[in-house]
Length: 178
Image (cartoon, rainbow, N blue to C red; front, side, top):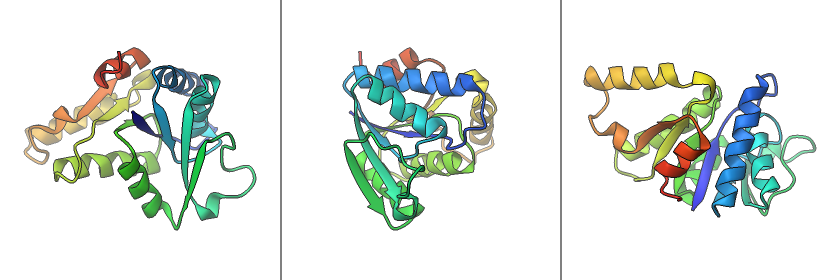
């Protein structure tokens, strides 16, 4: 299964996020998954890459050409796709992947998460998306999504493709990788 992990590129975050994302990457690689990543070397993108690498997992890196300079991209990937811009990168990652995990991140991660959720809602794809709730990071967003549904702004079946997990084991269960 090709798993796309969206996440922070910042290194200015608490180490618990890095440790837990590396652990998730390691366990997914042990289950035979392939990582589809935005290619970053730092932050949680880098952590996911390192976790996969430690378990000898297969990594597909998708990055805008602009980022293909020393120090930005993780360099231990199996395949590299360079795109024109972030929009093309996001679309290629969505097309290549069977499932999506949003580890904590900022506006870029939110953009990627909501793009996949919208594509599921509109029927362009039917692929699971998981909020990986390290340290309670996504609790507020999850409550907001439920509130939005109750108010009629989000269809009642949104939680059929969108899930929340707090451990690698929960992610593995949601994706039926046991």
